Image 1 (cartoon, rainbow, N blue to C red):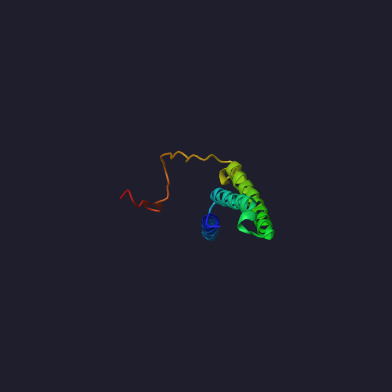
Image 2 (cartoon, rainbow, N blue to C red; image 1 turned 45 degrees about the vertical axis):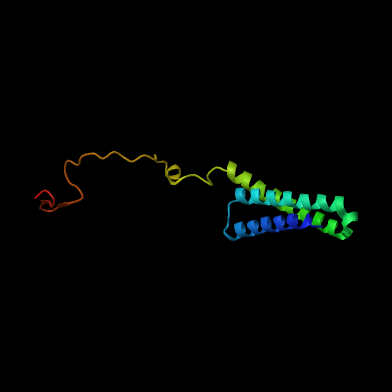
Amino acid sequence: MKAFLPMREEAEKRGKLIKAASDRHASPAEACKLIGNFAQSEVKMMKYVEVHAAKCGIPPQIAEQLKRGHQGTESMQQKVCAMAQQMKNQKPAGPSLSDVLGSSTSLPEVAAAKKGGTFDTLSGNALAR
């Protein structure tokens, strides 16, 4: 049973990392990796329980609880990792403003104004005086 406690603590630590990532709204890619690490720690615990159940007096319902919890973890991992993959492959949501307006994305060339401009008044250009 002494070997099981470090495994459980590792799983708890990895679970807290997932919670912290959720609280700070981490990216799906980061969450996918964290959930995968947590799932690995669950598998280690399940294997330990299966091998040492009789010797350590571990009740069979503990193994069942671990399996059900791991199924939930796998389900969550599939959803989050699928979302991460989708975001990785996703193109921009829609056309840009220049696409909609039918204009180019480059700046227009400035032509020298020959007569009349923004700063012209009735008596001539205020800046040229």
